[in-house]
Image (cartoon, rainbow, N blue to C red; front, side, top):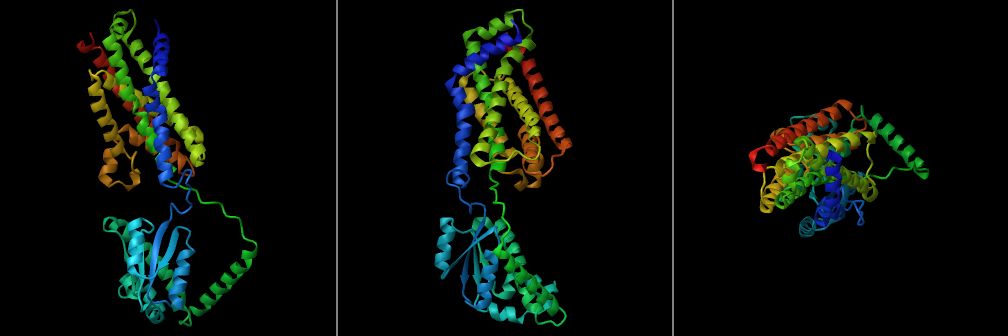
Length: 404
């Protein structure tokens, strides 16, 4: 009996195991589809799903305030709506139709008229230092989104200064000529609107972490399937007969691991293919780099499954230990939430998991204009190192007295 005989036998058993096929192939597709629909990326495609939604209360109701709102609406990343009262604005926040409330106070136009060009560049007492309050502007966000609120406030502050600067420059004889040339350029742009340049539609970016994140997480679900397979064969006595047969223990382990490795590679490939079909997800400028990352990710996952298979003894242990391990590693590695938003310490901690190295490689391939071969090689190297370490530990455990 060779490695391929054991592999072929386990492939047949795995193909007949409907629960394993659902867990490895059907369930990941369902999760990605649900997340896609909830974020407006699939079926219920919403072009506004990735835009900051801002609701404005215009208490000034002047030409200047109307022009400011018009400037905000020109920004493709902002979706601006106006309401008359704070109660209506609060309702939009509570219903999720807005992320931020911008209040334009009744003195806005008056304060804008008082701004001079020196106030724009005065970092101690000018508009740049005092912020939006200097122009009778205020923002309100949900209590649990203070960080996002500060970020949006900084963005709006930059937009307001850009709006006020030309108005103040018109009052300065030195900068007045620059404003006129700017207005002339604007009129030329208006003439060109008769023959607009076709715009490339904006691509939704949620899939850039949804598809890789769920792919990596579900790739490691194979460890539970492998552990149950070992337990079943041990209880039926077939595993003991394999050990007693004139077959090298390494050949037995390879034969038991290869079917799940091939299944994991098929699973990852199918998820990326479905991401392409359902989301229109591009595979980066050099999609060939996806192949080694998928192969190394599957190697790390199946080697982990081998180690767990030699540690557990009951199906209850597989359910508790395997599920806990999968969810814990997925949560700290960035499968559920992009790593770039992690605190600095958590970013370092996440690198202790193979998931994080896989996600780094996928991110470099899918979202970067050019792929760095050294980064991909480093990520694949860490995945293979993890795979070798867990395979060796599983082999040593397999030879221990627990399986004799």
